[in-house]
Length: 416
Image 1 (cartoon, rainbow, N blue to C red):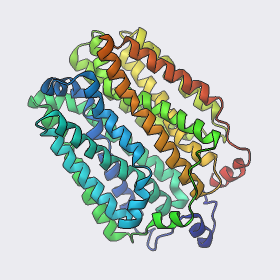
Image 2 (image 1 turned 90 degrees about the horizontal axis):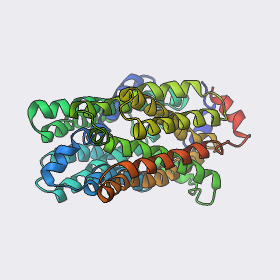
Image 3 (image 1 turned 180 degrees about the vertical axis):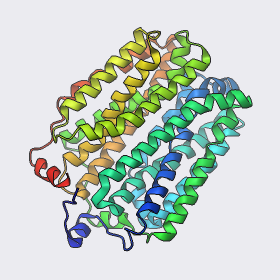
Image 4 (image 1 turned 135 degrees about the horizontal axis):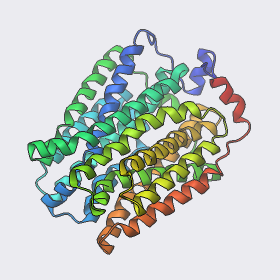
């Protein structure tokens, strides 16, 4: 794969910076990236398996409990805009270290929360650390691995998926073994601390090139008036709304359907483990510039899975959850490539990506919240299933409209 910007002058103009000594530090850079990525999801995912215990401790309603997932989701959208400015002021590496420190401290503090207010406040700290770090790592990949961005992005997203799967499988057993949800969720602060140290070591070996400064010098406005950008953002929002709603409530949904507690909690692992398979597989298979057929197939798989969870929860539930997550993995992976497919420069891609994250995560944050509210109002998850089914249908219908501009095909060929 070769960069579409073949010389340093074009790379600099496009916002792609080559680091001196980059080849020597490639292994160290990827190792640091992986260690940070592994730490970005456990503090979020670990809540789901022990949510009944947390709710029992603080006497939370379903609506309030949903905020433990909705708040980080909301911040992942809101922080997409100020993070480049913060990186411009503080430096990318320093800001990542600060964000990882906030994530680590907030994870521990949440585990020792004395009341619901502190629980939600520390959850906001968790969301801030995840949001800021995640926004900066994409820029790090683009600036440090311009000629291998797709490969390194695949490594990064796979590490995110592994970091989601570990707590999904282990949190409930740890809580059962220790008799404490606090220890079972707080222990993941160790991964955050390791990630922070890894990035500190990495920053000492890599010159801290402030990519945000380069990008701000070639500013492109957010595409508020572009219909294609809105369709991409809403498609991305549908995907994440479904995923985070299931992440927050899937164990309780299966408990309500009559599955034993241990089985209901472990089923969350099938939701996250499928991401490890689906993310790289769909990326490899979707080689055509027009991705609508894959977008539609993955959307249809997601819809079929949610219908099965809603109406036939006792029929091969682990199998159904796994393949539902494969569909979600595909729509997420392809959804993240759509800004690239529809833009003509890195600066424009950055603007479209920021817009997609902003709109997408703000809408997605309503998913866990709405499911919790409906559960409180109706006394069951039945109405929540219809909400998730409706969102799946919207995502499927949108998939047929996401044809990229024809002029992007030549540029895409240059990347292959």
